[in-house]
Image (tube, rainbow, N blue to C red; front, side):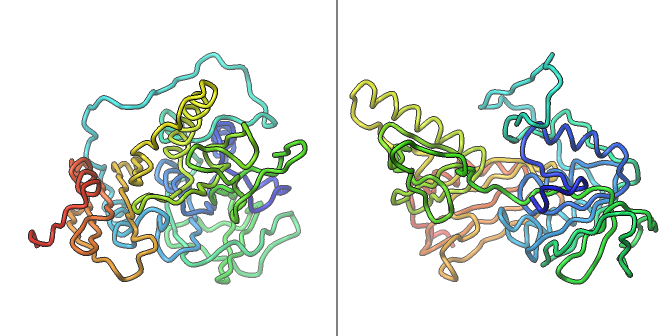
Length: 357
């Protein structure tokens, strides 16, 4: 969080904080969203009737997931004000949940983690007209709040309401200052290992603070397994797979841990590592478009040793294929391209496609 004791800062991390956000937004005219990950992107898209100042520490939107070209595709589509192509009616391959009749929750009780459908059915509305202004290559330097605190100069983006009665002001590292009613922190995840204590032996942690696990999700302590955001994959990975703290990998790791625990209890051989650990794959939706990320989709760790092939149809699809030595090693598919299965098979087979141009 940007601040743990500022009442005007809200961190979005689970279903409970989303409920708090809904309540706080009802009287909010303008909010500042800090973050460039999946939750921040979805929030800015889903938010209605509220001015939004979006603070990014990168030079393009969604840098964690896609390149500046894809970011331009999304932003240009938003400027046109068009709705994304209608999602075809398909059978989902994962369980969908709906919870009814739950008692009132407390902020002291953490909700479930935000999955791909966290915004479905949510009313995320403010109290003014929606407008979005993006500040690139900067971070939050300081938060100013209190009746006696008024910065000398604030920036009012084009089309935004001119007001001077904001309860909190956000000072950015680029020198710009914005007033708002609420600051939403959606800056990513950090392994929650602070409370992990093992009597007699401390778990080995990796450099990023996660619990180090092998390919069976075993920690350094006997009979202790870890999966999801709290762990760090410490085995030699497949060439087209890498760890990224997403709900899809948390689910895959959880399944792997359960399978290996069951095998250990029955004194059976270690199960073969599932194919989901051979090639990175993540499916989500951004700005209403289906997004599929495969393999080394951003050329992770490749430097300049790969080339990108692009096919772009404005407001309909964005296809990027990354090639190295004639072989497909990564892809970004935006829209209903129907290419994900073909591309995944080409990555598994590592066929030499040089002859096809």
